[in-house]
Length: 400
Ligand SMILES: *Cc1c(COP(=O)(O)O)cnc(C)c1O
Image 1 (cartoon, protein in one colour):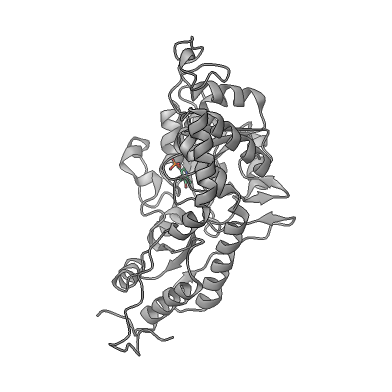
Image 2 (cartoon, rainbow, N blue to C red):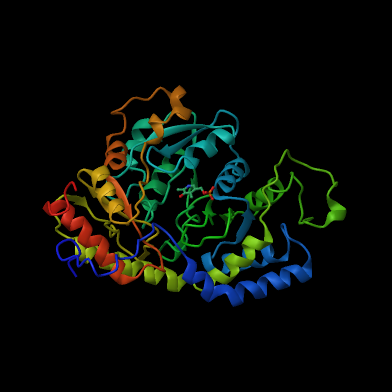
């Protein structure tokens, strides 16, 4: 269907393509969600209760992690993981210059200092060669971030961390379902995190997150930190609110409403991941060779088995902002992950970085555009988005 050239005024306008929606998924899942919620109401604990414990067990089974600790958000998970993994005030943590801001702000919140490194232009994850260049004697942690569809180069980064005595803490907030040789994201070092922000591959109906770790001591400390520094699962039992604390912790308990929704959604996660992959393939087939497109998502083969997961379908394009405007004018919403590199954000100004310090991160910020990708997206919507992208670059859709 060529929408640009043969618009019949009697035809209804095509429906808008939102950047993200899950209305259909939720109506299909509602009976399951309702069952979990009614069990929650019977139990009567709405924070850090039985549904949270059930979700933690289900996620441990899904990821293979020895411990999954449910918290309030992916950001809190990072802060608590860094603290539990032994970050001391002033310790430095190597973080990619291209990521969501929480990768680096969590380091500051935990009392450390981010040290930025550049990214690999294909995977958008930490470039080991750049890490070697930025290391200082105060670096004690390395934080690979797994973005968009694949893991960072965990083999090389793990080897590098071992050589320099760095503890690996993964920002695997986007990486549910991503595995290498059967090992799930977050389990290549001391631990990792998951975010259940609504748009994530496994999304709640509000904020929630989790820490994943195989380390018993880290798990015990995160468990205490999320609940005012109290060891043991004293939880939502109102008679234990005033028991004594061993650590200065915080309130980062997970809500059982979120756990109920996530338990229902987890039963469909593998089907959702397969649907995302099919849609990503459809985009890639249609967009391959389109002039003006500088890069399509490329899953890097590293030998051995790897499970990529398409959380975001990210292209790099010439005139990225104009392209986004053209799509928006035709009802297609896109997002920019991430418009500004971390080393140039005002909150990290004291680190003294300048434009040009991390060229691959800066180029990614200038060129990347995320197209709609979610299980409810119809395959003909992908065709429509691709028609609009191709019209834009062929000149047919240029400037109204
Ligand atoms: C979503 C995300 C986070 C933060 O998770 P929240 O649950 O929103 O706090 C951190 N890092 C990355 C890479 C993310 O995508």
